[in-house]
Image (cartoon, rainbow, N blue to C red):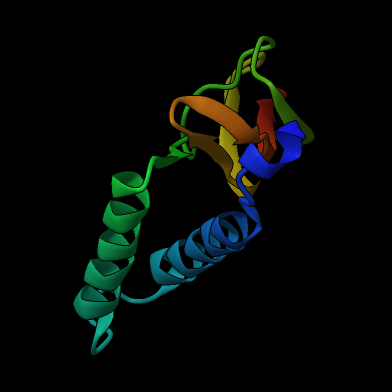
Length: 115
């Protein structure tokens, strides 16, 4: 049976989701918060371990959205962007690659310029 060679990525995907959740919370904290640098360094170490084991969290936050992306996207109108501009403003679930191959598509929020 070929299924014995299948790798169970469920733990890695749960960890990836938590990394994104922690990063989101860290980004909302005041830069003077005690322990913030240590927490950020811890997240970086987790990501480095992740990478050492063949996993990659694809960085999308703040990047421009394009139609060809293999993602689940929610579009939110924005008055802060010029008309037609589409920027990824929230990561709900990160895109996770394993050895260069996508194993979880991203779930994102895209702000769309209205003015």
